[in-house]
Length: 217
Image (cartoon, rainbow, N blue to C red; front, top):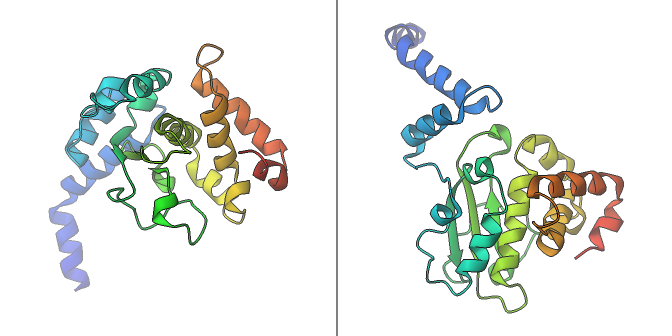
């Protein structure tokens, strides 16, 4: 068996070398040009790069809150839009629930206002999913959109350490949740950029205690 494996590796070393090179380029966000990463993503995921709010919201042009959502999307930078490949507006009956969400244990499906999925181990991988709902009277769709975008901007890089930092904290006291709530409630693009807002609030979250963070909703 060992000989068969070694023989297979020898015969296919070019393929493995190419795959490793592509993965290295794709994950090396600081040194790889975006056009190169976008080509690799197209090959790997079959998804095109999102460059505009209109592309992100494609298919929802007739949604009653479309213009408000587009205005919010316009407030984030193109490189952040580039990382999102899956987006949807749902209700409690058709919201696709992944195996794990960063929500309190036992939370009922009808209580989830939306979610944002990323890959903690591969924070530069451009295949991030954002889902929101528009059927919650006490949580408007535009607020859900801002909340999940807040998660997206906050976990752009170093997502593994940020996830581990919150691992043993109650949901309502987690830094990521505090930042997303602040972004949803207070972010104003006329006053500062989305990235600067997130950076400032992240530092604020680091200074607060778990109890202090849990009080903000």
